[in-house]
Amino acid sequence: MPGAPIVLLFLDQLRADAIGAAGNAYVRTPNIDALAAESVRFETCITNAPLCRPARICLLSGQPVSVHRFDDNQRVPRPGSLPSHVAELRDAGYFTTVVGKTHLHAGIGHLDQCKSALEAWGYRQIVELPDAQLHQLRSAHSDWLTATTQPGDIDKHVRWKDFVANHRPTTDPPDAAPWHLETEDHLDSFCGRRAAEIVRAAPGDRPLYLQVCFPGPHPPFDPTTEYLPDPRRPGLSAPI
Image (cartoon, rainbow, N blue to C red; front, top):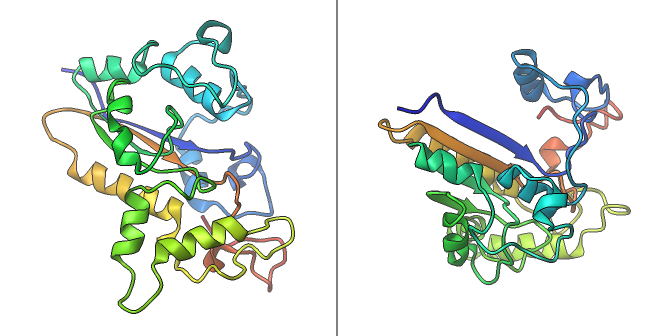
């Protein structure tokens, strides 16, 4: 039988020095700090590629860009055409699953329509979420927003799309109108909840391999009111 469960937390564009454990005094990240305190933390780590899709392909395949040759965000490899550590874990008996942004295909419509592309890379259970800037894509998140909209209210997915489309992070307050949603409605909050649900429901006969690919803190840089800087303590955010 294969070994212990594996959970890979993958954040999009989080600077290495933007957490308390790295000595940052302007953000409060107690949960990440607690994980770092019980872990081996590498102070120097260099990506194989400074772009999203090439970096993700490096992680998936174990190959540098000079080998897999996908060096921009426009081209995508044919599903299953490169080595995949996920497929190897699947074949070794792991229950392989992913929640969040994958950027491994040119998604259109509803991301559930693209599951076959990710299955070819070795994922058995897939809850794919978009980059927030690709708000035109439907996903499990948009389905949840619509399903939890109160009768008579404007669809929460429509309100979320309107916020992302009109938000100007360099000039607007981070939760400027039309953000009239709750923290639980945020794309990253949804990602974390679904990941926790998968862990709780994981099959007992196989070890779990779970990738939790949070779409943030990639633009549009959209913290909710709960996580904005506290005006009574300038420069400090609510805890993450």
